[in-house]
Image 1: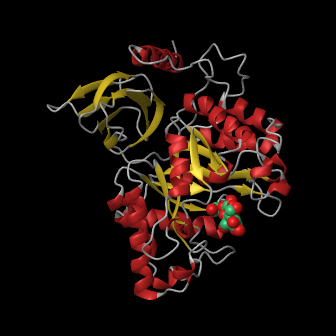
Image 2: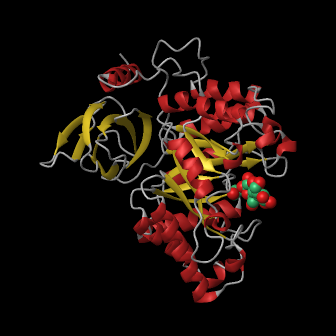
Image 3: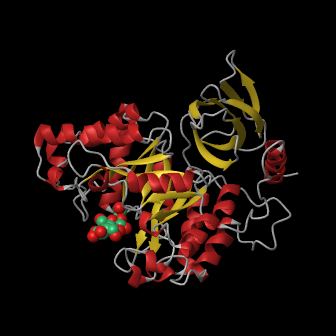
Length: 446
Ligand code: G2I
């Protein structure tokens, strides 16, 4: 039996275990037939940008709830939305999205804590140390407010200039000093130590371009100096002026080799070429540390570039050819009605894995019942590993799968060791009234 088959059986057994005494049995029939389920089978998530104003549109939420297991608020967590007046925070629309997602077992990417754009008027008018202080306070307040609910934060967005300069983008934030980016990351880590922290940008897809190299050099520098960065987001807004290029996979794997995860964060493709969508998915699957893809909207009519019809569903909510291509690519080229009976070829890891001893474990929320919830942890950077996860008392872990667990005296800290079942393990937590997300404490390669 191949590792993939064992994993599938492990998850089925876990579903049964977790369902014992639960209010209802989670559906398993959708595995491999939706973007989210198919991505999960590959240890990834498949997400979309969501606008709070569309959550009352039934056609929209039907697709959202069926297909996606990660959401990114499209505008609702931006600075102008969350701190419209200095020191007065406004979280209503963001919370609407977070609650919609988390109550359905979807994870949330937070977007974005520090950005030159969509600043509220009061911030646009600031400069120097007052602005630096206001920016750091914003990062701290917002990340603290959502602490434990956000899997990944885009901490800093779009800080590099386009073109051949390789320079930082000029902005009021940049003018507070070149260290504003690392200061923002440190503040975010302090506020929500459990969240994965990303730098996010566009036009960084082509490995040969100056902007890509400039971001790469910053991330390499951050890693060498211990600045807390965990991932890099590639927006991947592809169009005729900024097309998909075949070295995209090289870009993803080169960044991953620095010891960060990589994520496709805002994917849309002018004209929605099925071939290009498929290439993007295949590139992500080929890079072990590419742990998820987010498309920037559901239907073409939801897109910021609606006239380019760049998304996976048409304006009537029907699946486009690009959708079929993405689903097939996630299923390794097979259609959902004809699943593979043999183990598919494993993907080639990037040429340079992280140094021995280090690995990354990413926790994602999965099914939730009335009294318990499942979490899934994806390990990258090592095939043999030890991951320490803690739950918050009075929570208790009631079942695990695809790993060998041991416990500390309190029963709240679980040490999970790989047992040959692959790089994704899971567990069920009895909430006992507390729904705080479990936290990965460490990942050690062994
Ligand atoms: O511009 C595309 C994306 C590039 N990367 C960062 C993303 O945050 C950015 O998203 C877009 C949203 O999709 C748009 O929806 O960011 C735009 C603003 O920079 C958003 O546009 C704004 C309009 O500017 C506002 O006038 C409008 O009120 O959308 C708002 C809500 O529809």
